Image (cartoon, rainbow over all chains, first blue to last red; front, side, top):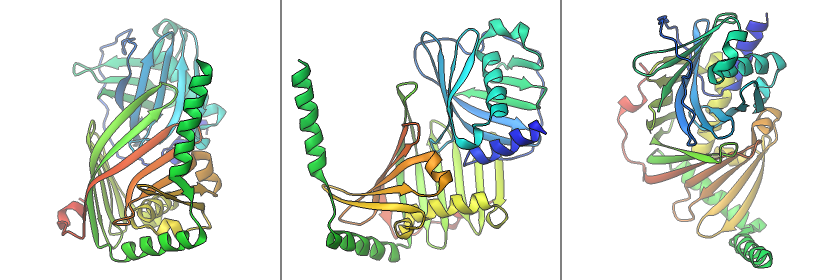
Length: 152
Length: 210
């Protein structure tokens, strides 16, 4: 039920969505640090798969004393901003449809897993993989969500 | 030093206030009429665009570029070519979204969300959004070199997303030159339309959904 609500809200929240059926390939490669902390803005093409659908957008991220990031659609409209420290991910601002506790909690946990490798041993139902071409794949098996990141 | 800075700030602000004066009723009527006339005679429009997204939390920008094609009869192709490829195409009652990894085609009639998206995008391009006072508060400014029209959303969903949408219109061809969307979190997206070609033929392939 929570998963259904998550999916419904996610569909509504991102104005321009791209939905398509797609087949996932599972790769065994696992890397602790998948995004290197540098004090310049890094940009990624972000695709979020859930069930048979997906959402596309852009992730902008920067590391100084902590990670700060923004997820937006291709038209530049922000979906949410977040910060990640060694122990915590906090969504600072989210569009209204995303601003539900169960969505925030899922996204915060997923981005903490992605950006704070020290927390991974304490987090279940998630794994992160990197492909030879640099594609990063974060898989949340509990909610059947995949985040695919390609550097721009 | 602070006083000098404050004076400079005040000076700059006073210049910007002077360059964008609120239009009188007559000026507003004139601007509306000219924009409506230009919209009525608009058959096609094609141009390059540069989109600059300012992300306040990162203190940084993202610049995207692409091409826009409009043809009367609710046909619009919005195509990003740099730094990513993405096509948003409205044609024949359908919306196609295509990126490197995915393609999706949606029947507009089957989705209220996409009816709204289509209405917003088309009204922005052909100027009908200015008449939509049920959805926006509209303020006109007689600026130089561009007219400024500020749309403040009334609908709850739009209000939660946008603080304001500013359209900068050329007083020579009465077409939109620049759009500034200010989000509720303070982030700004500026879309500048360049090298506009009005009423030049555009091939059908640009609007083909397949």
